[in-house]
Length: 464
Image (cartoon, rainbow, N blue to C red; front, side, top):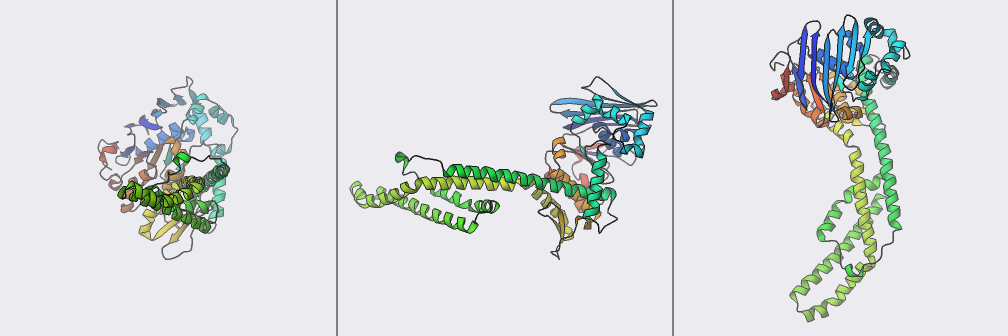
């Protein structure tokens, strides 16, 4: 999904907003009070949809246009003294809520009710259902809490679960609660979920390889007299040798005896190399000697090498096939960790300036290490700016919902970031997820740098 336009009228009673977004990167700039944060809040209210957010913002009209699977979809909200009307282009009906309905939704005690009449009215309406079917952008607000695509009521159990997780994970930091803990808890959940995905995929790869190796062991291959002299070239042998490192890693993953396997493969390549050497020498002699001498002097040597190759060729072919299988298995297995490795490498690229690094433990938790110590520390030991980067890079690299929506929205990414980190920020998040559409409201020239062509100013110029 890509967001193409937002149009709003009388925001806060007087402010017009009209933004046409770029496909890959958009900076929303402007002086304080120009409506940058309000524009992002309206985007999320329309695309979630979030009735509490609608209730808390004053406006008369808000319309967002998106491209989704090749089609244009328009979501519109109209607010008046009578209440709220919500529409979407592919549904003829209109979801209408009175001011009384909106006030009930905003009451704290109502947020705990999952079966209230107003709740049933909203989630049962075709407009709400249609918007919920769309992929929701990920939004990082000023409180540094990621907004996930869940409804107000559906989120209650998740909030409790994450609060419990925060108390258990960071019992030594009782002040680390609320939105701060929620962001870090999100990171741990993302890592744990990704590690579970990796383990499941690894098991599938393991089983697939075992099946292929077993089938190959019992496969009948008839001898080929006509092609008995066909052996791998020297270049092919070198390519197989280069794969030995990957094969060793694959063997470790399968819990195979690596030293024994490596020794046998080394002997195999040594013997195969001798066969190639002998045949090359024979071919060279045939070029330099006359035909009679060649026949007398080389037949015995050639026959010996060819017969040895012929008797062992079927086994050699199977070994080469197994090497190819193990090599592909090793490559596929390594690629499973690519999202986690990308997240760790990007994060450590920033943390190296503070002599820190992060590492993902086998259980999926994120540990922090100081340059001067090998003792792991909890993620809660990071500074506010470091936590912010960890949260953003984790979602960009690991969040499957973000991969599906393709839109990442950040309000004032420069908060808590050193000027050097601000300058590196955009490049880092684009590397974390190159396909995502980035929409950022910012005051910082260090965030924008020379990308002024991506600016949309609510004041008319790119005055971050």
